[in-house]
Length: 344
Image (cartoon, rainbow, N blue to C red; front, side):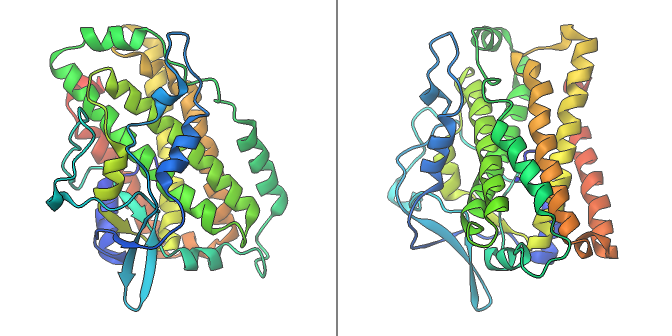
């Protein structure tokens, strides 16, 4: 999710206020997020070890027109658009060789949707004295620069490290990769749809959301390619079609996304600093990419911060303050829940 590292525990608690998880229902649509991800992943550079750009596409199957929608009262709230719905009863399955997704629990990353009509009304420029166009233009230029365009380049170290890693460290790393990949892909789906829906209402903000989805797609593809080194890559196309979507109100989307991105920044930078001091603990080369990686998360958080400044009422009431505290606490709980061998 949308955030790369959003906490499932916080999501579950907040969903009790907003809505319980629900499976998307098909409605008519014009294009798919799958094809959008494929285009985004073309931005990931190939490495010198014959890894083509297409290799970074995280296991997408055939993409066709379709979307999800969630009924809420008399309104139908569209979820991020995806491929045609999978009918498991008819024997449709994941791509051969793909890893079976982890069972959804309170602490697993989720896919999110919101009331996009309400979000459009919330982010309109007209009548909002707190909107500062110059700040968003500066942020847009930052995103357009795409500092990490050539950062996520793989090399032979990945496959070699995967072959050597065994036992508990291997299992723990795979869990980390899967959770991170799912969270980044969740962010891609939500940001891509927000970018599409806000084009007329607020084109500057819409373009930033689209560029954020580019970053999230790049991260998800890089993580899934790392899982492929263990022959455990996810079929993200299948996951998009079958995963339950959790509904959040627009205001929850804004400040939980801000917290998620900023917590993600500190998570990556803390791991990076630890491994700089103790390089012997680098069990897999993906950790060497975390310093630049965390800068993407920081930029995403800065953008969300600018959106929140346009709507100070969203974060100043007592409920928002409690949710912020709970979200941070649940993230700490999630991080401390893993085996000590991985945390040390």
